[in-house]
Structure formats: C-alpha cells, structure tokens
Length: 510
Image (tube, rainbow, N blue to C red; front, side, top):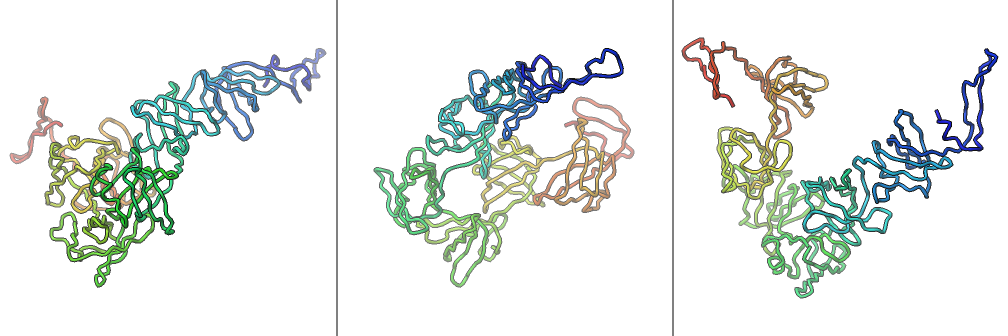
C-alpha cells in the first residue's frame, strides 16, 4: 500500500475499475514503476546491508523498505553513523527523494555496536578513545559505571587487560547505550606476537633493550617500558626482575613489533604429566599449547599434594595436572604441585588471616585464600566474609595452595515437573519462582535412604535440595516430610505438638 501523496510525476500506473455499475468506479491503482518522495517518522524493523535496504514501520503500522546510497546521511545527534550501526527498534526521522533515502536521523536510540580499534584508555578509567573500522577519525566516549569486558582466555578481565595503542590496539566491538556511554567492550582481535620460553642473549639495563634467541635461533630485540607487565619468582617490578635477565635464562614475552606487553621469567611449567623417567630423572609435562617440556629433577624434589603428608613422586601419575616450579637457574625441577579440586562445607572463615576452615568426609582442614580468586554461586566476585558456615564450596588447589574458591549454588524447592527422557527437572522455590534444571551431566537422586542415577524416583510435590558435586553431577536430595500439629510461634521459632516426649518440638526460624 502506497500513500498517493508520495507518488512523483512521471510514475507509470495501472488503474482497475469495476464493471457492474454505470459509474465504473476505480477499485485499485497499481504502480508499475514510479519515484517516491517522502518525509516521515518510523521505527527500524530490519537493516539489509548487503542490498542497502532499511525497512521502517510508521505510526499506522505500515511497513516499507527504502534503498540508501553512498550519499545517504545517517546520524544520531551530532554523530555520523554507518548503516551497520542501525538496529531494530531505533526511532527515526527520514527523507526519501526519487525513491532513494536521502537522510535518516535516529531520534531515540537503543543500544548500538561499533567495530573499532582501541587508541587509549584513560588512567582514571572514565573514558576510552577509539578509531572506528574504516575511519581515520578518533572518537572519545565515557564508560558506564561498570562496563562489561569480554576477552577470550581471560577470566574476569578488567580495563588494564585491554591493549590500547596508536598503531596496533585491540580490535573491539563496543556497545553504546542511548546515553552515549560504553556499556560493553568485547575484544575480537589482538595484533600481538607470543614468544614462549625464548633464551636471553643480553639485557641492557640503561636502554631496557632485551635481546633473545627465538625458536629459529634468530636474534630478536625487545624493548621494555613502564607499561610492560612483569612476572617472576622474585616479584613483579622491574627492580625485582632485572637481576634475573641474565644470558641463558628463559623468558616468555608477548609483544607488538619490538614493544613488550608482558614478560615472564619462566619459573614454572603447568600442564599434564606425560611421562616420568625415574632412571634418567626426567619428568615430561604436556603444556596447554601442546608443547612437551622435559625437566630434570634430583633427590631434593618436593612433591606437594593436598591432604597427603610426606608425598613423593610415587604418588604422581601420568595424566595428573601439575604446576612444576623450577630452580632459580631454571636448570632443574624444584617442586611439583599436584592440581586437585574438591567440594567442602564451610566451618568458619577468618578474613583477617585470609583463612577458611572447611570439612569433608569427617576431615577438617584450614586453607589460606590469599592467592585464590573467590566467586559466588552466580560467578560474581565475593569476599571471604561472604561465605557463611554451612555453605558448600568448590576449592581448586595447586599442592596445598588454594587458587580458586567457588560457592556452590544450592536450589531449594518443590518439584513441579519431571522430564525423564529429556533429563529436565522443574522446581518451584519458596518465593513461587519456577526454574527448569538440566541434568544431562549425570544425576544422583537420594530418597528414603536409596540413591538412583535417574529422575524416575521423583514425583511432583517432592521437596528437594539440588546442587552439583565437584564432577558436575547433579545431586538431588529429597527432604523427608515431617507432619506435626502447629502449637505456637514467635519471632525466633515455631513450636509444634509432640507425639512423644522425645520428639523435637522447637524449630528455629532462619
């Protein structure tokens, strides 16, 4: 349907009339070809960048598609947008001349995305400067209070993890809200090179020039600056790292051109044990990048395994995940820390000492958390004081050192639906909210003292407590129903009538 007012002179029409009355009234006008001139307002329904068409819906609900060309101006406030930045839901004013979209102004924006290269990130964390893909102009935007940052391979990245550079900054997708603040930064590409375990030839402390020999025995000159992220067994500042940059030592470096982004004096190797040669006293470790490192050891090797005192190399098996700590000169294995994970119940916490007491299988352990990341049951960062007694936690350890503490999500409620074939369980919690849980990773249902490995023993109405164990198996504990006649209640407890003198009749309110 086309508004006749939008037809331009010269349009070719086909007119259809009815034939059953003397007046022969017009019943339809079909436009065979014509030019449309129009101004109006609408809401973006679809953007086809391949065919250069945008579909708009006006206030009457009528939809029409318009073609743009290279002269079309698309803007929001004082900014020029690319057609790819238009999104469904944008409210716009537009002008069409000779069937070509002349201008389109976004009047009320929803979130839009921009492909760009990071140029700089302000030290105060309030603004970033970037250059759009295909543009030579720099733009600066304020950041939202807590912008979401997504970076492959980095858990919970922060602004300091972004690489901003005038030549080779991170390629990013920026999400900009209607207030023109950046709410999300997703790193889509990084122009950097990784040199793993290269050998130092020389280091000049005055110029901070580091010469190394790469895997092809070719010399490379790398420049350290005040932005280079440093790591070593001695510390993470330049004065701690420089004494270790002697000829023959191995370092791992990430760099752009000749500028070092990060440098690690290799002091550990992490991966899986691929072989243990006790006659030659060599341990082979398969790292995550597929490289096998052969490391000699001696009789002074320390083996560190959580829950096992006086551990030795005989307790280590092929396939075990380990962190191998090297000697200062990187010439032999100093200690071997076995990576383990287990589920515990919190007994209490001591935040001032970074210590948590936990128990499992009747054994109580004190674990220090100063080197661990702590996360809640939804993956959010938490403090040690946030973990209450009785909470279940999954703790990942390297030897006896905790590197991660994660609160286990506990779901309490009533079973309202069971899909045994689809391995799905629907539960309504005490607030009346319903959620469906998948148990495809395995399930154990504990009911009336028996354990089943499927959902068939559950029935609607069962009150359950649901969690996952350390292997990811869903544990469903069906709680025993206890029926008692109500007696009285106060602010702290409920009392019920007893059937016998030994019955508990007082229940505290949480």
